[in-house]
Image (cartoon, rainbow, N blue to C red; front, side):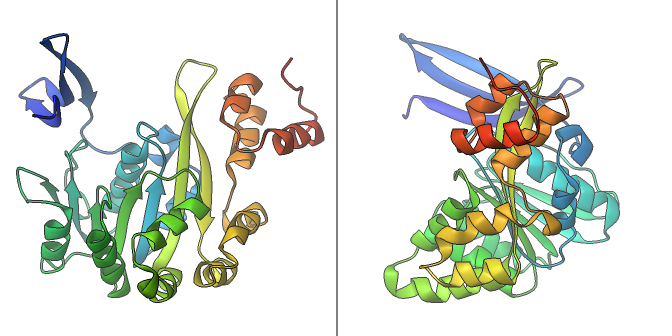
Length: 294
């Protein structure tokens, strides 16, 4: 009745496709995108070693964020693929739809699809806790109860991964808090400060060879970050902590974009289209001895 539907479909001996069917001008149109079997490597996606370190966590909450089409699913698939190849753990994923099919390697993986295998994310997440998982992937946190259950799962010793449609780490933290009514937010802040392991925010940027590479903001939780999550009056300072957190693997979008320009992967013009703060980026470019766009 909505006029569109989104799903995944497998054709034997051909492949698996992400399908979007929609009405237009009284007829029906369809767009198909071929999906892959097995996740990509971190190197294929262009993810730094900091993401590998986040994926090496044994418990806690990991969030991958960005607008629609920014590569969140691909990043999560790379993390699951890495864990699958390196750890003898039980992974349960809940996806809508399943886009990347994983084959058991060192890990045992169960992939559940909304609509076909389970009713919704919350029902599946609660059920997953009875399935003895070590790692739980929730395709998206869309409501308060799913967020609450994800944090609770992280608190009880599971590694929980999920996504949000937020543009940077500070907005991500505020979005998680804002899912809850004011009288619960202090408790949620403390829980998030204790369980959060990392936030990976991304925007896809065109590369000089016609591909795309993620520009990243990476937050790694430490004492300074946890203090600013816990205190609503200090949360806005998180960006400054990221700016100074290179030792821990943290990076801002603009630092990430500058590195991509220096490596010759992205043009100056395309980098300027994606920056968070144009003035600060111009200063960083000048300090690095790089030319500014005309």
